[in-house]
Image 1 (cartoon, rainbow, N blue to C red):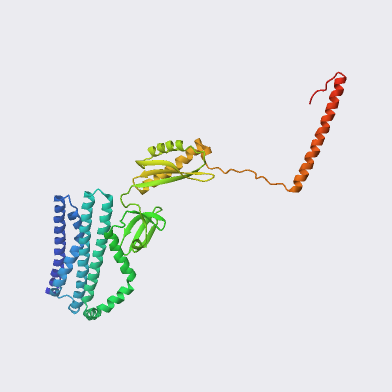
Image 2 (cartoon, rainbow, N blue to C red):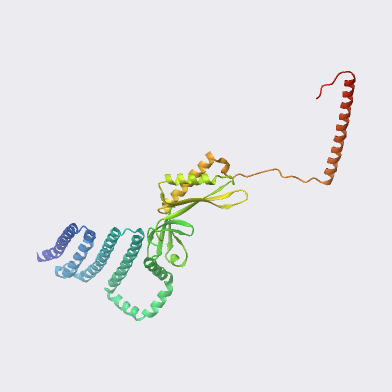
Length: 388
């Protein structure tokens, strides 16, 4: 009877204590969240209930399993498994608490700050800090698990004895990885690029969607994802349209005929941007920026609150202005002037043309003399022939 009750008391008591402790902690956090609505920390800590219960249960079982007298032949192996489970769940709990603290801090900062650029910068920094903490905790947990095995302790001692040589070898082998790691930290705290920034990389326009310690993802306008190593942004130039504020200035170019009514186009542009909802009202303009023998280049300048809005304004200005020119001023659209080119005549052709001209002159003179003779004869007979 004792052999049955002892395991039930040890295992069942550990499970009951775990469930009661988890319920009590969740209830306390719920009350704290209701008393302090200004901070989301207490509500977010409720996400740690499951790893907390696992840690508590593993710790209770690891400490009291020897008293259960269950599977005595495998007590050492089961104790080893419980130790590994305890280390793993503890690492999970630490990572979850760190994530909750980081998210709570970011939420409070985002609520109190109205500058979107600063919010994106802090978001990038806390995201990378969270990833660094997760990596460190994972590495420490894995090392702790390995050190629980007696054979690995000897290996660990040997590794520590040759740490200098291994460090040199690892540094050479992982040069690219370490470069990306330090580049990620430089991006996070150097404020070069942030999550949500609009960038142009290798001719591709998009928004920074994710930043990790080794790579960066850019989401293009057509929903593609471009993944690039973070070292690219520390070694090569790129365009960041979100630096200094999200406001943008866009241009629209028109190739038109020299007769284009520029002054009337300027008034039409004022009307178009006034009716465009994406225009922020800061500035607009229209000017002739270049000319060629056949066309002139007219530039329309518009402003908007961000990159997406300036794209919308540019497309609407281009579409409505071309339609208006086509319907009201079609002569302003570019045309191609064509004409027959004169061909110089050869000397032989010139001689033949001159002989033909002299013959035509003689024929015309003879016809004139005959007409005069008939006129004189008609006058003598008292009749005048009708003129042709």
